[in-house]
Image (cartoon, rainbow, N blue to C red; front, side, top):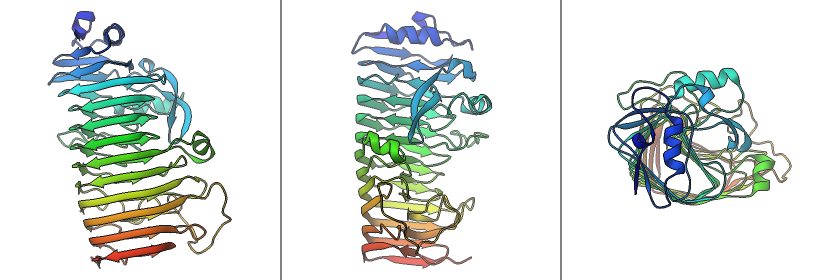
Length: 400
């Protein structure tokens, strides 16, 4: 059965119609559809429920109201910790849910530039996201365009059996190249303590990490102990941002991640693996295969946040460090074991082509580079690793 939001009082006249759209969701029977027709519908935070499809027709747009008052303060995980946050435009409330779908050819626009300014000024909580789905089994997001979030754009927390396909995510600029002013830390998609996730055939233009795989931060993340695992990212195209990242919040563990057949255009990196002191946890069995990367941007070179196109670093976020000085091994010492980079072509005008530097007290283990052709600035850095194997690797210095 289809529930058209107009029949519940929603109007595309610029008025805020949160209550009407939420009424359509609340009264929708399991297995039915909440239908958003062509037009722009201004709304505050919306909360989905089990068994419901939110369908956005081509030309339909859900537009965040731009008023922080329409986004209540809730407790979410953000940046690895449970904390007070502004609600997102599309949410679940944290209770267990099943069988949620977001589908169609329309747009979810969080109006993040306006919300960013207010939320940062009020400081009642961390910034909201465009879509934040928690504790949901069997989630599908298909076809839609999601853009302009105050912070991370699509955030999945404690979810299982997720399919994301043929979507567009825009956190850096819109489809016409207009830059979203003032937003920072605008990841595209964050997979946070989730299991069995497929992301395919999608386009992400990101202000920060295009896709990041996470699992909580430090002692809190270790106590929760919920890993992100069994994740496949395939056939995607990325523009701007920092490619596909693992961490740096990975204290619950990350394993069995496959990045396959993707194109990275003017992203600062293709692969970023970040496991630093204090996190604990593990990163295991990470694959980047059959991908191409080219970067002509010079916004970032060798910084504490970014050191190379193919990057695995134990000192992420540190301005100064001694890579030869070990510290005692304890529960905060992370493990990195099994990184596979195969059939990759990398060409960057900023930063190293390859930078792999583990911790001296916990070297990164079992690093495999096969058929990798990489061009960057400066000589490659490979340090604090055990069982590094290379086959058919060509790394060149572009100079400058």
